[in-house]
Length: 321
Image (cartoon, rainbow, N blue to C red; front, side):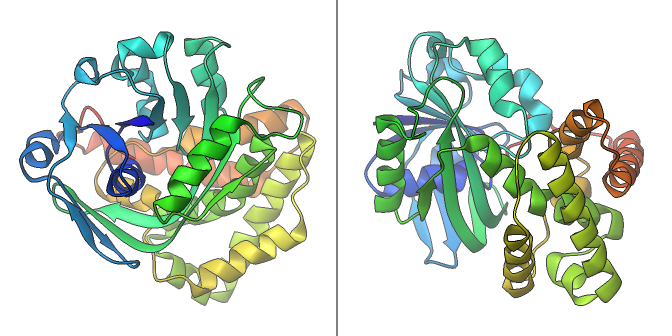
């Protein structure tokens, strides 16, 4: 298969680089790093072993990307209004789309733009990684993927040949990859982590280790997870208490991690509040479910984000995930 990566940041750059190293043809759309990566390639500093790709197919605009079988979307959800212009023009008729973005509702938005005939899949990235210098990606911990089909593009068992092919490619590339028969459930489950840790990391200016080490903060994390459970239940999705405990346990043992939302805040970039908090709160609210801690967290983040953006002199036009 031939792959295209829209948003060559900590997520798209990492998983795309793994595919290229495994022998696949991968085309990377870049913004700020375009000239550097075109000349020097990509460097991955990983807990699993560092590697470099001295030559990559770097593109400064999507119109130069050749027709590919799969398009990986790894932009921040705050940039989704740009996708109509950033997606290659041939995507209307060719290729499947896999969104590696956070939050809820991203596949629905893509389906509205691309039509129901386009195969749309979702990918959930369980990884601690961030961008360093131009063309550099630092992978600190974890790194697994869970992928699933959206809408009508799956069998009753939830697994398609395309999903199986993608999973096989990533596994051969050294990425632990699972296929979920229920993408909606998987997205809600990931919110158990994203809501408390991304949100509180900004409000408290703390990394994961600091949050887990402080008893009252750890309790607040648990309270927020329980509200995510309630929101999911309002949509007919059951998140087990064991899921909550597993998230707490794995976070307690991971390397100290500055979340992606906190890094965005530090760089004065817009925060992914709507996809991670706003959309699930709206869904629960329609069912009359009140979630006071999630609501307050969203309100605090909106205040901080607004103040941060007012003091931002030079926000980038496109921010990779």
